[in-house]
Length: 556
Ligand SMILES: [Zn+2]
Image (cartoon, rainbow, N blue to C red):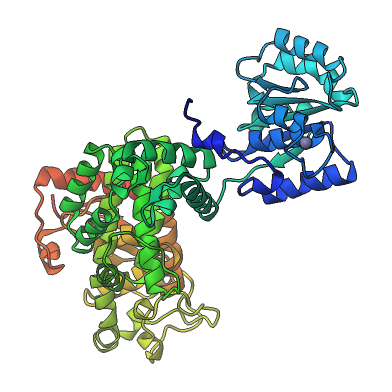
């Protein structure tokens, strides 16, 4: 006896058994109950989510000797014939291999003949979008006036490729990706039925990997069962899919929290070398961050990461704040998107981990902000730090975490600029020249903090610079030593202008320059890179901020 693959063995026989498509099943059952059947249905949705299964159940419901019925009996000869694909009145056509006009002419001919024994003739056309335009045209007439005993069920993964003339004559059902929870539950049922031994947490892992497709999940279960002789183990799952043990992912995040970008890059290389797929890796990283997020939010049911010690997770969750976590997730979601456009998966992963390492650096920034109010109010002249006097000036962003919120100290400054001062304050206030150096870093960090509550990933980019001086609303900044450069971003430029206007009453134009030696050491870091590297870095930074030319490069 040949082995029947699980996806076929556990193919649903009734509407009730179709996993994850309950609304569609219910609608079809109601139509059968009330006799309001359409002549043509279009089932759309990703592969492996139950379109063809649903079509066969509908055929059974129509052909059953008790039918048309919402609950086919499964016992009668007709039901059995449909289930075994032997029913001559249920015709399954693969659109991919019958796409030409001759095929459609044949189909059109056969439609005219009465059913051989049943009440209906049911045509199930899979991958219908593959049919050629000519063939569709030849078919249109049949679809407009089908014989009363004919029901068409078209299925497609790409509804947009189906001509509008066809779509508009069909009742369309959009099949959704099936939830991980529903797939996991089904996997547990199948394992129970097959007497497979399933290691804890693996149902969820397989479901996640299947990305909403039940058929893919069952195929993987087939492979795993064959691999492990009926025992479904994490080890075989990792072996077959290139997925890493969750504890290996935990190690990556330990390296990132230690701000060790080098170790993180080595980790990525190792994972790719052992066959992990880039998309799977990013998903696993997101799973990990999600587990941390749930811990930080004291979720009653945090997601499980099999094999990862609870204390290790708690420690990581405590080392990051919410903004950093969300920012990291945003970086990964963008990386996931970038994978679709970029051939070089390795590059996407490497950029992502370096950016994650930079987000992990931000606590030092947060600490600096915590010490801010005293320094600002005692050292800085009131004029330079006073907030805009306009009563319409908005308060600090409410979503900013407490430790990151803009310091309120400056509001108390007595000698505020007169309310009549024009918007172009810098030039109006006589020789604005330079803001005292002691004040600028604080305001720069205030800006980064405000940006953090709006876009963590932009804040991370801006946080990669050290402010040098401000004059007439132009703030010159230098890259922190050893920082990887962010990709060009007009969004960052726009955001810094806008947020500075809100915070300080005038927009800032952030202009990167090469770090002068003294400024760099004042910022706590020696300029480690050589002249060539600095020039190259400078060029890249100019790209980021719109390519403005800098006169009098102090580092040159
Ligand atoms: Zn029946």
